[in-house]
Amino acid sequence: MRIEMASEPGSPRIPNEDYASVALPAAGRGGALVVLDGVTPPPEDVGCEHDVPWYVARLGGALLELSGSRRDMTPAECLAEAIERTARAHGPRCDLSHVRTPQATVVMARWDESTVEHLVLSDSALLVEDADGSVIPVLDPRLDELRPAARALPPAERAAYLEGLRNAEGGFFTAAADPAVASRAVTGAVPRERVRALAALSDGVTRWAETFRLGDWDALMAVLRKEGPRSLIARVRAAESADRAGTAFPRGKVHDDATAVLVEF
Image 1 (tube, rainbow, N blue to C red):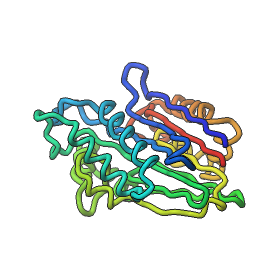
Image 2 (tube, rainbow, N blue to C red):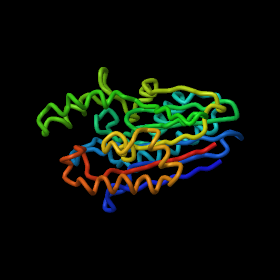
Image 3 (cartoon, one colour):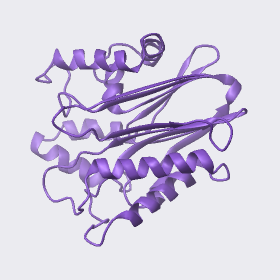
Image 4 (cartoon, one colour):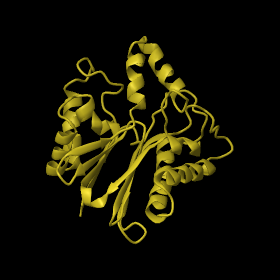
């Protein structure tokens, strides 16, 4: 088995808000991986004394432990319990109902000798390479479906529009403080014999395919397997630097935190 991971902050002056981890063996067999992408809040009040890196470290650690050790729990149940544990770790000055309370997107996968299970919440991605070489993206499309409407608004109104739809009916969902959100995740399972490789990617890496259109998911997986996560992130950084103003490829940030985990069976 080959396992590689890399994570790079969008700016050396700002802490990386992504999280990546892998457990081998999980519950004595197989393994588990977790990738989180923290949601960067605006500089105004967030209703919490904790920052996003604190949150992703707490949530990621809890989710890896549960997904790796509790085979009796589904991936969604593991996420719900991890969110609940993290919520309990907040203090009395933390308003967990605040729309900007620390939160994150989630990718989780775990496997044993017979099955590969997966969970995706919000706009990070999991790529599953089949034994025949085809690549199946596991995506939560809800945020992407809302972006065209946001782009039609004046720039000053876009962030508030999307913020009003976060963790709301008719909107999109992230892991914050409500464990019920786990039921909104995209989940599934495939036979282990059908899976040749997995790739968990924060949206700072999926830019390669989704924003810069440098190739499809099959091509992205091919680069990842041939060159490794660090090289893939370097390719994204080169594309970002070539369009710093975001005129050719509009995006919220010039550079974003970028994380990739590759597991080859």
